[in-house]
Length: 253
Image (cartoon, rainbow, N blue to C red):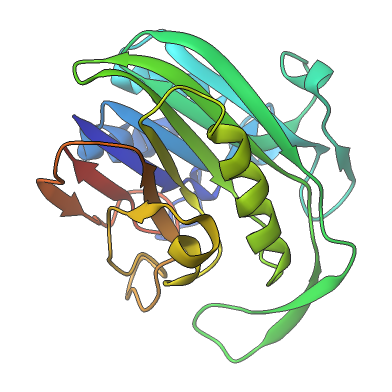
């Protein structure tokens, strides 16, 4: 079984900063994942041609088992509001996370993670320029999945870039996931390097490899964590893909 996480960068390719369905399909099919967690996902955003990117990923994987959950409604970095559960199937432009599975999903579960109230300095990749960014609300999405290994919970999230606050979010999410059937796997961009995900969550680390930036990875921001008994990890891959400024991260069990 192959489990992957991918920060989509709203489907953008770094080669020309364009968003095209063909490149997204290429990236997803290159992973050959059975379950994939997605971050920085657009739905009905003009910058990504008003597409539903999670649906496009599901189409590329030829599966009906998928869900998008918005973290915010509006345009990231401009005019937006925090999403609520009632927005999940809405028609407004949204931004959030997605989970796609080739295997049947018994149930879906959402954990909302409020934004930090402070701005945080962020260094732009490839430069020494630092900008101060306002945090955005975050969300976790979990699926109880019927896999060849048995029933398990697979979740994804994209945590805050604000130090300490993202640790609080991780503890909140893993506490919620502990209420769902095990074993459990968390796939996502946690916006923190090792060893913090393991130390803060108490979960096992299933992949240790730099994932960011995609063109010359120096740091691991994308992680696969696990709780409960799983088969040994047979392979770890971190390919550069046709979209995103992150590399994909994939494990094979």
